[in-house]
Amino acid sequence: MGIKSISKRQKLYPKTDSMIDRFSDLSNSLLCHILSFLTTKEAVATSILSRRWKTLWTLVPKLDLDIDNMHLSLDKIGKCNEPINISYTDVVSRVLALHIAPFIRSFRLRCNSDCPPFHFDTWIRTAIARNVEELKLLIFYSYGIHMGLPCSIFYCQTLVALELSGGIDLDPPSSFQLPNLKILRLLEIYYCKDSSCFSRLLSGCPVLEDLSFERDGYDCLYHFEISVPTLKCLRIAFRPYRLDLNDYTIEIKAPALEYFKFEGDLGHIVLLEKLDNLFEADVHICSFDGSDSLEEHQKRCYGDRVFKLLRALTTAKFLLLFPGVTECFGFGSIYPSKFLNLVHLDFKLNPSNWHVLQALLLVAPNLEVLVVDKCYYKSKDKLCWMEPPDDPGYLSSNLTSFNFRGFKGLKLEVEFVKYILKEARTLKTMTINVSSGELKESVVEKLSKLPRLSRTCLVTVE
Image (tube, rainbow, N blue to C red; front, top):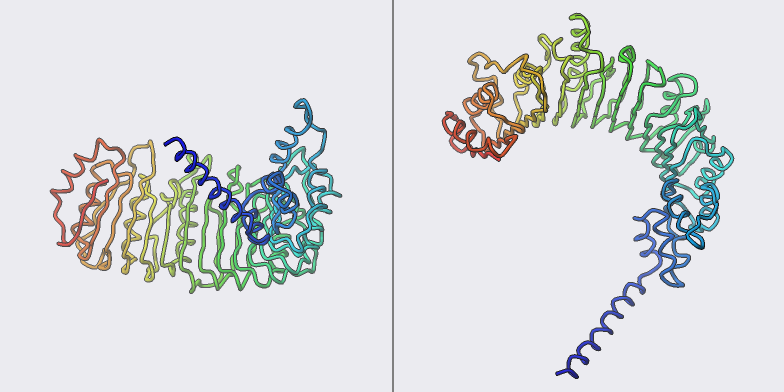
């Protein structure tokens, strides 16, 4: 038996070796593709595997250089656990010198804004000379220093995606063109002179399709223009830290827009053209600090801003909406236009916006899916659900699915669910997600007593 056991174990080793051989037999291009899913630090670490792997990372058409990762690896180099005194700039320069891939598909650089401009410019020029397609620059703002961009970026013919984040000064030339740029992300950067720098950058992107624009309020700019005929996807996030910064204005002219997202403190957003191609809109309005001290007419002013924005989004088929708290008090008759295309509504609910949901249901005659997500709040109910007058045309006759998340079994919540069951003739599924497992039994008991119009509706409590 012992001899047989040894024989069996001996037979296992060739199988293991063959598995290693099969992996080693992969082509360089396939191995480089696998390495492209790693950071450059991780890809370089594979060079110890064998002689073949020693320089394989230099052929990977992707470079991901992060100051934190580089310092971590340097501290582990040297004898007696003593770190070698090599700067981050030396490491990046060395990596670029050894990298011999004929082109760079993706180049990501994350460093401090006090990085020597000469090195920074050289690295970017090297990537551009290798026909870079995707360029991401994430600069940590430090010591009051902003990083300027080399002019060569604005003339790169191969650039398809550009992301600028952090301590970067944007000051594009008066005349330039990025003929292939389709994706642009500007995340809390700085503008050297005024917001015309922003508009000038967009004017040099003739095929731009995807724009993400985030602002933190420290730039003190109040007016922005987005005029891009080819734009299909627009994401805006504004997070001012001073009350007066909510007076900003964004003028948007993007007739081809298919997806729109806004998150933050709402200023004046003006859509200059009808969005006939709009498919999905995601609006999350955050109440700004100090809003509790506003006068009644000021609250109505902010409510009017919400109203104007929603009026411009009436062509959307999918709508995710959180209309804020304070801003909702300014709502009167808020929807002059119907959401005729709306088939899916995801509504973030709080005590102040029940009436906003009620009014929205009134103007969405083709709604098929309704999701109500109750946000966590501590305040007592200020406004509650009020069943509308007996009107058979009020609730969409197409509603087939209803989901209520964060259900606590409060009176107004039960009344709302009761109304849906009573009016939704074609409802197929109703899912109630309770806020805690202890509530499940009592909620099931309450809902089982409610009358329902649809005989095929399946009610589930989770």
